[in-house]
Image 1: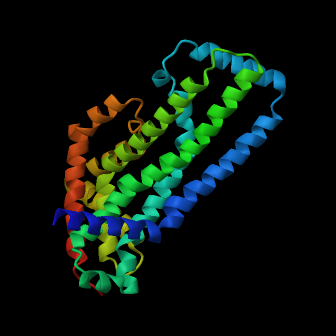
Image 2: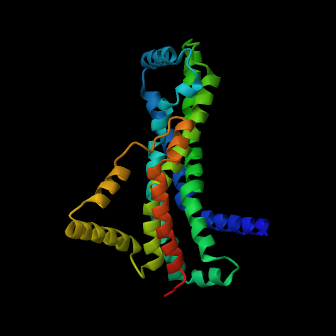
Image 3: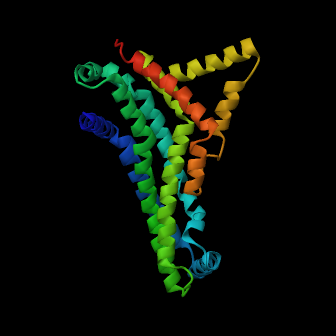
Length: 283
């Protein structure tokens, strides 16, 4: 019975990735290729003496360091990928349940031995865990290129302190941290995920505007009735903070079990429950 449930859920995940491959597969792949071309072009424009000086400075900086202590230089390379991931995630969540109703495919899936909660959970797992994995892999390609480039330049200019394996381990470790950072952000923003899914399941048209309009209405009512800005401050703390960045695995687990995150997950779960309930009703 458990294997049947797992297999059914795996099929749902494959369906989500197949239907959203342009968002979560093609987008990071194209971005990775584009950044590779840009980095290669920039590298060709830098004079040899400046490259030699830069590699020497880098070698002196990392000489004798553990690969797990030099991951920070790689992390900024992931910024474009994370930005694209967040944009694609919003587009995905807005249409996740809305398109099923608009196209009538929700009737097909409801006729199958698949519950509404399984369908909604497959979308949450896709956007929170699977898509960040692909994003981290795409950023890993770029990081690997940088590692190979630095190692080749180090050998060319005789900088022996730049070890290929040290850089490689640091680069691959940074890929893991990029994935954990994306997952942590998804969990901290889980109330936003639930809110968008709720309106994706409810709205007859323009679900994104419904989600934004509904939140603005809540902000107005809170200010008018309670004379407070709790929701606004909460949104600002989630969108304007660097607290998502994970620089070691222990730090990830410490934040994973924080009260702030757990409360957010609980609130998001209530909103997701509303989305599951709304999906029972079709236009």
